[in-house]
Length: 334
Image (cartoon, rainbow, N blue to C red; front, side):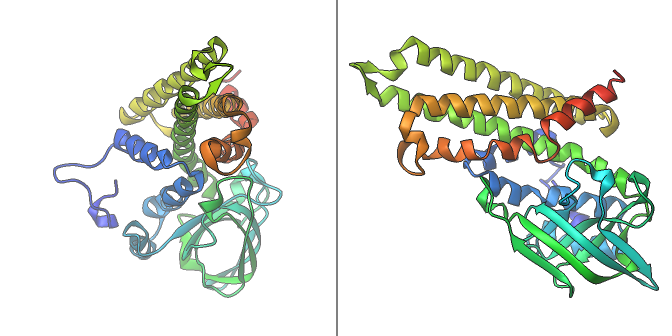
């Protein structure tokens, strides 16, 4: 999906569009590992600010990420600032031709494996107008990364990152100082889109696994699938998933037609909530169909068990359900 000048390999005669993006995300999510999807997609969130606002030197470095020669991570969330991005506390203090970084980042996907980091820092006063983005090389002295054991999405390399007097060249600033909030918000729509496609596929996987199991499982002399209560569960799950997928394609079409990030933010927020609530229902109902088999990490119900542990990984990252609903209403000026 990236142009050749950024290190990409677009198809002859054109470029991939948002619907190719959907197919790609959906097929990765079909493999069943949310952490794997995160690893494949975090660079689509960490690279765009550099390609849009970064210097030519930074763009040249990040080409290695597009070519899969290097890995990059996006460092925004902190112990005291998750969805509340405007209250980030990690500081970058200018000293001559360098910035000195101090602070902590939490829940950072892929940080365990990365070579580069796109880091949100405070270079000015309180609130959104004091934030900047800066490019940091992982091997810079003073950076400590430790793995964070998660409930689900184990393959995502999620980490706790500490910056202790980390000296970063001032030329690594992305865009202008104290203009980082806009860049961060610009990126969130695609992150939420990734989560929505991923979550919808996970919900669909719950349906698939439940149907396969209910067809072969015999209880009280008949197949589970022949029980009306089970058939109704599956129908309810399918109804919710189809609604989510229709909304995914509708928003994708709007984006393809040029609807900007400011206008797409509210609908995207509602989509993410719709998907996370749908996944929660589907994971629960599939687990009920499997019974005890979905309570162990092996055998027939192993996939549903794994997806169930990843439900919160759809509902919270990228903006929690409560934050998303409030965002949509604020954009609607209600």
